Figure 1 (tube, rainbow, N blue to C red):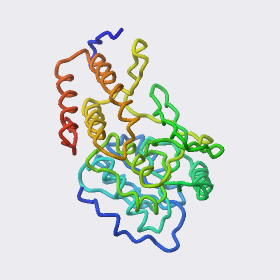
Figure 2: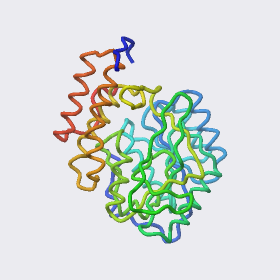
Figure 3: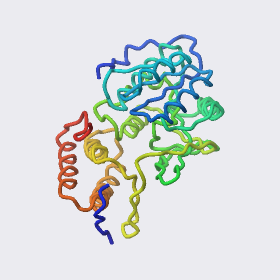
Length: 318
């Protein structure tokens, strides 16, 4: 049973169809998005950039100190910013364009918390090379997700009717953090949805990739811990658990999920699953907030926005 807990809880965008890919690209660029990083995250990012031999692109979605940006540039990173938070979709598109300009054939996308070694990058690069002979051709390959301490790992549903390739498993979608994207495929699939802003960006793009004749794969031989949210909300009665997120992000998740029901490339099986699952998640989130009426009103408004197609910057994001 659920018990109410009284404790609370794109101006950079350009049409990619006109992008001309280099004739002899270098293998991999590293793209890292940052948003209000703390001192420890800035230090870890600086150390990573200093040790990285591959071209590195950092997109500041807000909160990166000017001194840190200057230090990253001194270490060889290209630091990008729109001067505002443009959302994860817009940031990833800016990184992809910069990677193409740098002559990369692929870009590895990471967030500021990702602990991913150069050796693991090489493993994904080799996995993508192994997939060149399969049909459909690969758009993206990513590591097996693991939960960081006190967090919930994302789950990647298996893609039906597509056989495994040894340690490589076809999946419906992957989280963008840890994903190695083939930039030639990206140019044909199209950019990430900047109007989704933060949640569901990876799901929609991967469903679109499958729909346009490309595959999304998980390399089970390497793993990446995920640190989504600030803990886990669980209900043994409902048999579900979910990340504990800020209210604006939970609202964006509901809004974008509901909006995605109108998209023809999102499979019907996923829409039916979400139609059953989203109300339970909303109920569990509301109970975790202490059953506050304001939280319920925000979630209901987010669902209404999704039905009406009102996307963009989520309400409540400061």
